[in-house]
Length: 428
Image 1 (cartoon, one colour):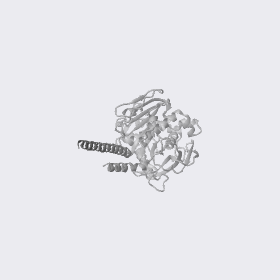
Image 2: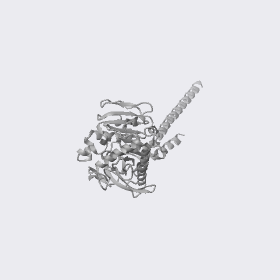
Image 3: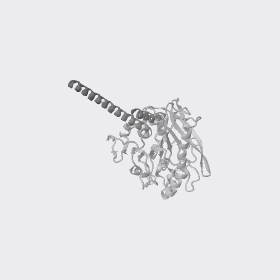
Image 4: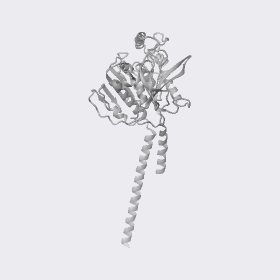
C-alpha cells in the first residue's frame, strides 16, 4: 500500500516540472517584439498589431517607442530559457494604444511574465465607423489630433451613459472579440516551432489587465457581459486600472476569479452614478482595492514619465508608479504562479496609498485606511483549484504517517512477543 501511494504521489508531481517558474526575486532583462495577425469578424477583416514584452537574457539597448518614450529593451531577443512564463494580456483605454502603460508592461516582463498588448481600433460616435486614436504601436503617431480625440471621448461617454445596450454592442463589436483573439494568437505562438515564443508560454496561467475602457474590457471578458459566450474561462486573474463598473454593475458578482482594482484619488468615473469603488464592493473574494494619492485617471498610463528621460528612471523615481508596479506584479505572482512570497508585498501598506482594502477570505475583510497602519494579513484559504503538486505533497505526507504507524505497530508486536517468551522461560 505504501509503495502504491508513493508511486501515485510521484506520478502526480511529475507534470508540474513542465511549468517551473523562476524565483520571485529574480529580475530579467526585458525583450520587446511586435506581432501582427489577421482578425476576421463577420464580413470584416483587419490587422491587429500586438506589442509584446517578455523576460530575456539578451542584451538590452536604448530604444524609442513610437510614442516618443525612451527605454532599455532587447528587441526580438530570444526569451529566457529554462522556464515557462504566465501570459498577461493588457488592454488599453479608449482611443489609446497598447504602448500606453510602458512602466507597468515592462515591469511585469522583468518579473517573469509575457505581456501582450494589442491596439484596438476604437471608432467615432454616433456612427462608430471612422477610427480614432491618440497613438499607435507603430505607423503614424495617431489618426486624430489630441483635441479632436478628447472631443470624441466626451461624446462617447455621453452616448454610452444614455444607452446601455449600445455599450454592450460596442464592447462586442470592437473590444471583446479581439481581446480573446489576442490570447488565442499568443497561445498559438507558444506551439509554433518557428515562433519566438515556442514552448515558453504557460497556457494554464493566464491573466488580463486593462486601463479605463480596457478595464471594462477585462470585466466583460471574465463574466460581467450579459452574453455568457463572451466570457473566457482561460483567464485566472484580473487587474483593472481606473476601470468603471457601468454597464456591468449588476453582474459583477458573476465574476469568480481573483480581482485587483486601482484608481487615483482624483480619478473621476465616466458615469458619476457608479463610482469606481463599486467594483470592489460587488466583487467576490479574493479581491483587492487600492486608491493612490495625488493620482489621476492618466497616472496609470505614461503621463508620470513625461518628466523623466527614460522609462526605467520613471519606474525608480515616481512613488505612484512604484506602487502600481509592485502590487500588480505581486498580485499576478500570487494567483498565476502560486507564489507565497507575494503575500509579503500584498500584506503591507505603501505610504502612497490613500486606501487599501482586501478580502482574501470567504467572510472577512482587511482594511488599511492610512499610510501608517499595517494590519497583518489573514491566513489565506486554499485555492479553488488544487494543484497537482499540493495533492502530491498531501499524499507523500500521508505515506509518511502510514510508515510511522506501521513501524510502531511492528515494534510493539516484537516487544510483546519478547515479553511473552521471557515469561514462559521464567515459568519453566
